Amino acid sequence: MKGHVAPPVEAGSFFPNVRSIRANIGGWAQLSVVQYFVAEAAVIEAWAGPEPYSRATGFISDLGAVSCGVYEDRAVCSPLHVVMNASFVVQGLALILGALFLTAGLLCVAARPGVRAQRFNVAPVDSSAQPRLLANSWVMAVAIRILTGISGAGTVIVGFVPEDLGSPWHFAGALMFFIGGGFALLLLGILWFRQTPMSWFLAACGSLCIGALVVGGLTGMDVPQPGTLERLMGYPVTIGMAAAGLVIAQRVQAERKSAHLRVG
Image (tube, rainbow, N blue to C red; front, side):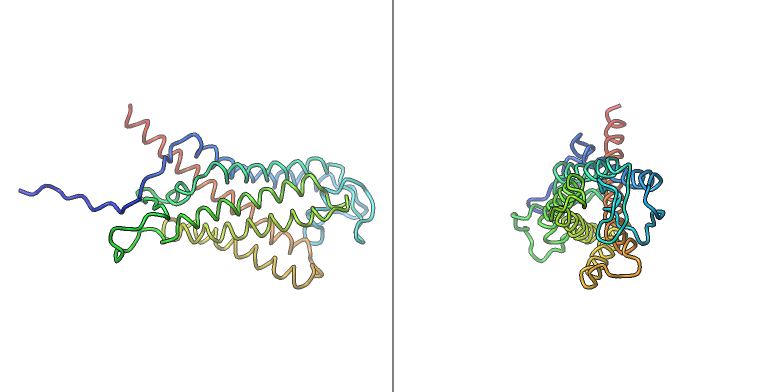
């Protein structure tokens, strides 16, 4: 009598350690970027310019301007600019922490239990077999980590170099945040395709950011509501990264709870 035959395991595939403290820190770090919205609301409430601040027409960086006065034809005065700039830095460090702590293997499997990661440098035994993950999933996960790190570094620069200091690094940092974050979310949506419904949301966030960035580049931000356009670049990155962090944190907690029950 034949026993049960287990399905063959693809060469080079493995289950990353989803229960590790490192994975837990990385997931919660990315989720923590939502603190930005709390800080922004508080800084807007304290705005002291001649006109009330409007999210539709006011640039995000105006909230971090150090001095009160006229900057590029805009009257700016943000008494809580330290809070806004600190929020930028904290958000950036959280993204960098997520990029460092969330391994490529973890990103490959975080969205659905039972999925195995496949190292990119190991050829499958049966080349005709359909892989459970995208063939280049490992490379894609590495790219996501790099782009997330770039995005985080960009917003750290924005926080340390406010717009009214006259440094080109502020603009460069903002571009790093938008471009890195937008493409990271788009790739993460593709990586998690058919693993979680959240993949569609992440891909939409990435696409919205990139699309708004293209419009901003073509128009030079000379639109009726530049604040709205800039927020269509930035908000999707923050929301999308937090959503991805939530998926990862929930998976880590579920795996740790399951392991605890098995031990108990």
